Image (cartoon, rainbow, N blue to C red):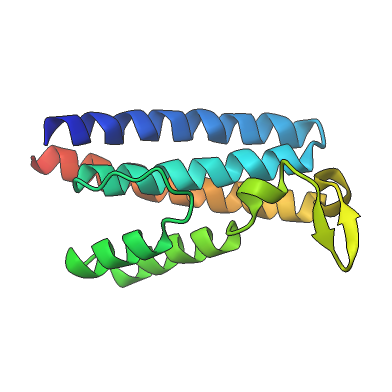
Length: 144
C-alpha cells in the first residue's frame, strides 16, 4: 500500500506543475496549451485519489473509476459532483488540444477552436479540483 501512497503523492506534484504550466500558457494567449495542461492537472489530481485507494490506471477517461470509488468510499457528494463535472468538462480536450479534428464538417486546428474564455474557465476548474484533492489527501495521509 505504501507504493500507492507514493504514486498518489507523485501524481499530485505533477498535477501542481501542470497547473503552473497552464497559468504560464494563458499569459501567452496559448489557449489550447492552457486547456491541455489544465486537463492534465485535473486528470492527475483525480488519479492521485485513485492511487491512494489502490487503483492504478493508464486511461485518460477515469470518470467511471472515480464514481465507483466515490460511491464505495462514501465521498462527500458535493466534492464528488465537482470532480465528475470537471472530468466531464475536459472529456475531449486531452486529444483536441493537440491534434486537428473535424468540427462542423471542417478540419479544425486546436488554435482555431479554443478561445480565451474556455481557457480561463479550464484554469479555474483545475485550480478548484487541485485544491480540493490536496485537502483530501492531506486529511487522508494525516489519518494514516
